[in-house]
Length: 297
Ligand code: NAD
Image (tube, rainbow, N blue to C red):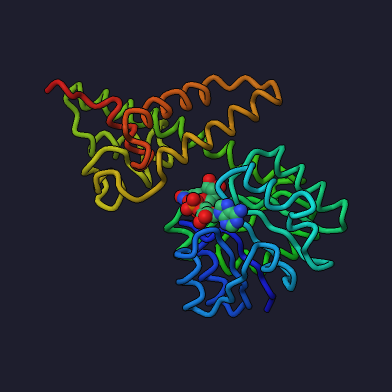
């Protein structure tokens, strides 16, 4: 069992840290918000007075923060984690951030003799609570092999996408494709409805035809087609539109820096941005269905 420092105990980090405690790891926790720390301490975690205090004694450091700026600020510089970690500590950042920030922090860590893994996750808050997250990792073979024991306590899949930053790139490629598939599925379902089809019947047909995809199989965006999806629960729970907008922004940033042509991703970003600005930011991303739904009948 390892001594783990866990920093960033929000919607994702909180339940992830709980699963580490349940697996028997010794966990020191820190967050800027005391209310996020309290439930972890009640389960046996040690509260640190700062991020730097959390890592002084840790074999493994895990961070789960909102964006690249938070990760850079926390790790880099004289006041950063890299300057305060104990020799040989393994650093794992599970936040979804831009690949350039992940590479910058990995290089700074390496310069001080540390291994750093970018390990963004797929699976959302439900996967974090259930311990079934997918970790998409970038870093050295050795570092990822070392990370696997703690990652397995929080998830069911660990993928090695490539060198530093590759985990972030793979994650945003996946989420860009997910956004495009969700929008296309919503558009096709509404086209069918507008032309007299039952969305449940149309979904059954398309699921096993050439238009079949994950949104149709697991996450139908039309209310009432699948009882357990956010669409059938007023688009509550699931993956917030605001987070999809964030990930599509990261995909656009990556496309710009690699000069890739990504018109579908750009359109998906623009549609989701407009959807968020219309007051749907905290609804599940499948609520994009309402963008196409008829409101004049
Ligand atoms: P969140 O806002 O709920 O949690 C972030 C936490 O980090 C907060 O508790 C905040 O107080 C803390 N924090 C920020 N700066 C800090 C610092 N310097 N020191 C200590 N604590 C600090 O966000 P979340 O939903 O848990 O998401 C975390 C990351 O996971 C994001 O990068 C997000 O894109 C990614 N992600 C989220 C989901 C999801 O469904 N929520 C799914 C996949 C990936």
